[in-house]
Length: 295
Ligand SMILES: Nc1ncnc2c1ncn2[C@@H]1O[C@H](COP(=O)(O)OP(=O)(O)OP(=O)(O)O)[C@@H](O)[C@H]1O
Image (tube, helix red, strand yellow):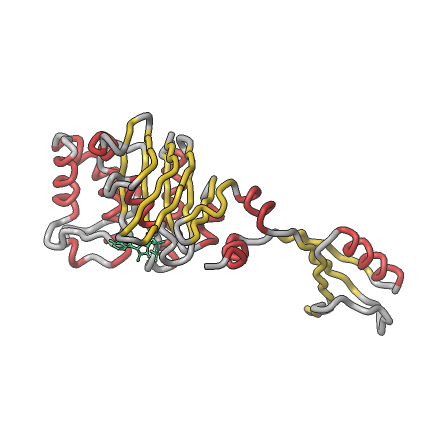
């Protein structure tokens, strides 16, 4: 379990993280989102033991990250937003190099590297890392975070700058990792993907936590449900349709935002000889919530 309590961090005089607290249980994916400069990378670096907060406490799996960062690093894999790979090395040599840093013997590293490359559908074919595509390089960086089989993964924008297929592959791979019990904390600007895979979401705004919780909890606090009513009208109807009503094919669609408005509209439609074909409930997306929160 990850337990962060009242973490704050300044760069010079600027406070870039302020009083950030959260917990994340084993086997969960926590998504940290926010506009550019909100403090996501700073928080992920603190979680990985790369930088220290000015105040607050942080334990991962019961270990105090601030007093014992080395022990935490052994059970954590960190993927920076842009990883610098050793371009002249081949992938197996690169993974061996990192495996040895973690004290693994050659046999274990080679066997894990083989499994990881297969899971990641990565066939570097003896090429040096510098000659691999961007998507392949990202997969190598992910393999490196996993070579010591850590329980916790901290990924900064794992799918950024990748084509849709590679990005999708990585999202599915993260789901697999969660199913195998890994705890994952990630930041991402692709909010549809965050919505799809994260058990918990935390929104940062200028270093402050605006909200954290499950998607239903976020929706409840920050958005309101709306109803799309799809209906037929017979011939020329005297019905006054709500503002924004659109016609798509032979169906009309009106949006209303409350149950009384929904009841009034459906009654009006049937009183004027129309037929309601379906009603769809629409919840605000994470993107809409983030837009509402603002920069
Ligand atoms: N090493 C540093 N020195 C000074 N200021 C920094 C440093 N690193 C980050 N900052 C500042 O801290 C703030 C938060 O930056 P951070 O990179 O954590 O945000 P972010 O949410 O990850 O942004 P993005 O989505 O653009 O990657 C920004 O104002 C940034 O300029």
